[in-house]
Amino acid sequence: MKTKRLIVVAILLIAGSLSTELFAQDAIKALVQKCENMENVNVNIVRNRNKETRKVERTITSISFSNNEALVNEFIAAFNKDKEMTDQEIENRSNGKVNNIFYRFGNTSYSFTQGEEGSGSISIIERSDNKKDVE
Amino acid sequence: MTKDYKYIEDLLERFFDGETSNEEEKELYRFFSREDIPEHLLPYKQVFHYFESELEEELRQVTEAPQTDFRTEQKPKKHWLALAIGVAASLLILLMLSPLFMKETSFNPYEGSYIVRNGKRITNPEVIRSELEATVRQALQEEKEASRLFTCLSEQEQQYDLIEQQIEQQQEEILNSFSDKGLREEVKRILKME
Amino acid sequence: MGQEQFKQEVLPLREQLFYYAQRLLEDLEDAEDVIQEVFLKLWYMRDDLGSYNSIPALSVQITKHLCLNRIKVRQRSREGLDTVVLTSQTLTPEVQLEQKDQVAQVMQIIDQLPGLQQTILRMRHVDGFEVEEIAELTGSKPEAVRMNLSRARKKVKEMFFKIEA
Image 1: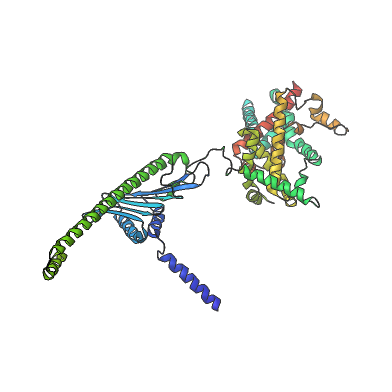
Image 2: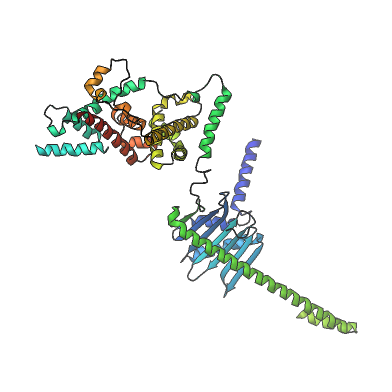
């Protein structure tokens, strides 16, 4: 019976950690995942591979959509949730509207831009090593 | 009567193109086993007789004859090492020459990339290539500008810090110019309120 | 081993074997033909595959063997040698029957055909497989199989017609 309880506790712990975002950048990443299944949201995932090693050096995720005020707000909320662990952050507002957000966590940068009428574009650049510009 | 032959001739052509069905081939066999075959089709009689029955007979004899033996690959009773080396070498060849390792085959630097439109993934390299390239350009551009902005802002912040320091220094100097302690405290309070 | 099991267990090797054949032969069409033949051979060996240590190793061996054969044929035709000798004597069905009892090796019609064509004729005419089924077992496109079937049948026709002429 002890083992059963331990297993239950373990499962609850894991489930718990999955539901709250313990790790940085989780909220944004989760939302990006959701976008792949949505109608009228364009998602581009670009993987750049190194010619010699053939390994992925850089992944760029780009999302764009329009006429979706709700999604704009979801993204702003996600960016806010992940704000804690950023190395660099820039936020640009005017008249209470968030126009741009830019974060950097280590090798990854996130950028959010809001346009007219519920349009938004997000781009995430993840690099596998410390090079800033791979080309 | 010529109509009949047109049909057979058409079947013939399709047979030699490998396009006939089982039923159609049976028709050809039936036709060519008749006695009253027209002259221009007579040469085919042997051919279809062959396909219908002799082929099978010939193949039966072929299977009885010794075939190329790949026996080195069968389970041995001795010579484990030699066999193991042979198997390993063959597997290595397969692995080394598989697309993963072959450098001379076309390398797609965008392997694994895709775009999603309305919930559907599109992975075809030619179709998405220009879209991917545009994405890369745009994303890198945005990042550059953000970085530039950040450096600008940090510089500005540094400037503000400097100015703040200067103001503090000046305040100190002013305060120190008051020899009267009571007056100094009074001025301090006023400065702090701003 | 049935068709489904064969498709699941043996067919996945196709891509790598194809690259291997292509490297040896430097020709896409030849490689395609060799691969068809490899899988048809493996199909006919399917009940014995269990007694081999490694099916991938075996298939590499067969592929190499068939590729080398093809290269030999290429070289010979470049040198102007005939690999196949047709004699009207041995080819007519009646004469065949006569010669069957002879000690000397009988040159059957089927022996004149390259291995791949032999096997495709066997699959179609003796075992009754449809072109699509053969294509599935070899991982090839039906068109590619149809082309080889067509070549095989035309060759047989030619052999018969040469005697007549």
